[in-house]
Image 1: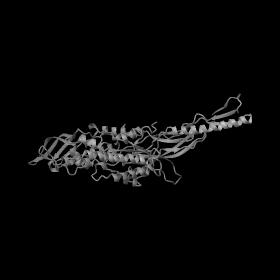
Image 2: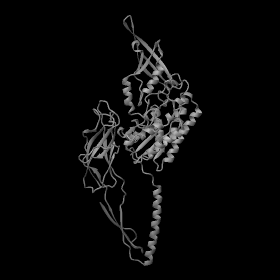
Image 3: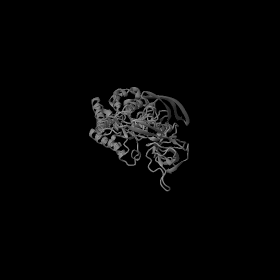
Length: 538
């Protein structure tokens, strides 16, 4: 504690003398005891445990001393392991005996501290609560957290002025008083001006969610247009001559769509005079794809370019709620569901990326699109915790079509396997080489050769002028609504995503529609430009 005494003005002057006394108390905040580890116990679980929605808790007794106003205990994710527990995380005060632990896991990572004298030890009996966001297979999973005390910046001086007026002539005192009043008015005006000119405080993000379609979900981002994939051929006359592809990585929440497209392209093809009846992607590939999907997406993945990574968020505080095939109407239904994670959790940062599937639909209606998007955006904006929202327009799909039209290659399949057949009861194995080039228009369904493939129906009879007009109407609607709804600078429009330069040959996945990792980085970086200056990244 520092105490000082001084004179506010010249003691030899005619005006009153002011004596100012100052007491400055140093701010001190520090932990006493914090457990380094503990036993995680189930709160609610179904079956044998490890199911999406199951809740677990870790007892977290904490002692500390803190005399600063506005201080908070803050939990942050410092996990660096591969098999991280996929969960929403929150810290809560433990309930009274008989009460329910971990009631409403809402991704709150903070606990306010009531300031007390620096020698007073405070104890907090907390629960660290985890709610699984996906079902787990057998294995070992872990998370690591860091607990800190976040303190506000204190003024350098605490002015506690005591004024005593000197004895002077009445007229002089009155004049000084008038001057002081005028000075106070000027100071007040200056204060108002300063307040208007103060920079907006940076926003701290402890949790985020992504709503959208397959672009936001990260489908097929680990494939590349123009690549060659190896096929392990196992052609068996008695089982219908199947091709089994073992190394074509398929990321995404539902790779079955792409697999069905491959089936259509390959089925009925002749390979060295052997007719192929079906194509199979083996279970190991599918299992790996499912695991890869959990860290996919331009905004929510573990990649260095994702918004989650830029914000320093781990998997437990990031929810990718995007679903392949979703249009804005599907997202409207998603947020209308009271049990959806977007409504059962509080997220500081919400990204909505939608419109590509609406663009591709033959039943597209701009008025319906506007109505659905307006409903979604208003419901997100009106959430009590006042989240920051990033509205992402659709990329330049017109340019995507132009650079993949005609006979452009999607990917090649190359391999050599075995064909097993029987002659007079003797099993014979023959070596069978195989090469197949798949074009963009075939795997996407534009050519019409395969009736059951239609990735983007609008491409089936595409007109660039109509496509440009539809794309512009969608993006203009999204931008108009962000300006119309936002009243306190919480909705941002990712204008950079509209840049045609983002769509390049080397930025597309094997289906000539979705972005690969290169495309994801371009998309994420372009969107980040609209929000990078508003977040506290320290």
